[in-house]
Amino acid sequence: MKSVVLICCAVLQAEVESLCQTHWPDLGLRFLPSMMHMHPEQLAVSLQSALESELKQGHRVVLVYGDCCARMTALEALPGVARTQGKNCCELLLGAEEYRRLSHEGAFFLIPEWAHKWKNIFVKEFGLNRDNATCFMQDMHRKLIYLDTGLTPTPENRLRKCAEYCGLPFEVRPVSLKRLQLAIEDALLRCSGAGAPV
Amino acid sequence: MMDLQQALIERIHLGDRGGANALLDAWALESGYEHLLAEVLEPALLVIGEEWNSSETFTLAQVYVAAKVTEDLLGKIVALRKIPSGGQPAKGPVLIGNIEEDFHALGRKMVGTFLRAEGWDVHDLGNDVPAALFVDKAQEISARVIGVSAMMMTTACNIKRVREEIDQRGLTGRIQLAVGGAVFHVCPGLAEEVGGDGTAANALGAGGLFERLWEQSIGKETGK
Image: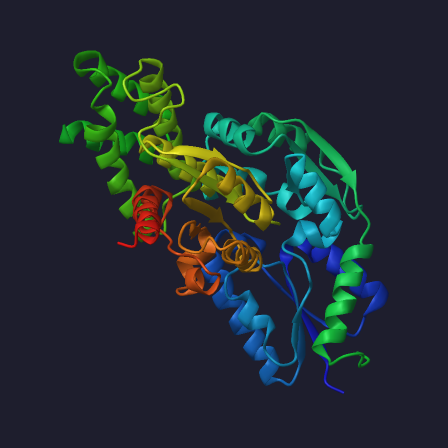
């Protein structure tokens, strides 16, 4: 039986590793840097390269990603490949309905790995100084929501500083890994053919 | 004038909204706000639009500040009644919104700002707008152009439903469908695939696109 590799965004590295230890210890794991999300065309090139090298070795592949680059649809359509169903990593953790509900409330989501890099992302990637960050975030959102997956201590100080920089309140929302687990299970079934064991 | 435009572009490059506004205010003190939009800001925005398309180092902050400076200036001009105000924009009503399941508001908001700067009466339906609501509202306000934004491929595909609504109600041509968002820049042909009547390279190009689609709508009705 061909082996299966998960190619994942490192934004969910701790969560995916935790699930694999418990449920799928034999799966291969490969992570790509989460900062590639800021440069979708680079992400597409790196994903394609990683995917091709796995497929050449006869592996089936699950992409643990949202719809993070324009080429994603073409990549997930390749034989032996499936992607977790969700528009982005927040939706993979929350489920579509809850993601939509919270988005309507004006939520800007922080995932643990991302929360540790918030300043680098706001200042270097977005170019937002404090004044512009506050104005921008208040224009677009009403609150920050930290999705606490329970694998690392909640970075209260870091969240407070991020919230101050953005001029928004923040809240911590515990989320289980169940939805992510189900999304990966579903993709595992699809990449190996309907209903086939993995 | 060229010096002022260049200085304004530099302020925007630095993400300096206050500095950009100060430059415009100083010029307006001597020459008034009346011609500021057409003679200073719009040419500067054209340059910024070209850079935005061609430079990989252009940041979100620079784009955002360009939109906010435009918004600030519009507010001042309207307050001074230097352009038509009080619900009487120079151009007709148009509709914008993010398609169902899409929550990336920045591009849509910038399109709204730049359309208003060009005199359109912009009705913004916000994020996650169902297809039927776009067409209901367009009929209600007699909008000839609906602008639908989507950031990702999966949400862009939802725009097909707006196309279907327009066609099923017999409004093909009468209501024109403008589409835009990051995914359209990297997927040539996607605008046509989802049923769009046109797209623009970026938010700054929305004015020209809406102008063209508005004319097409009139042409459809008059048979010209």
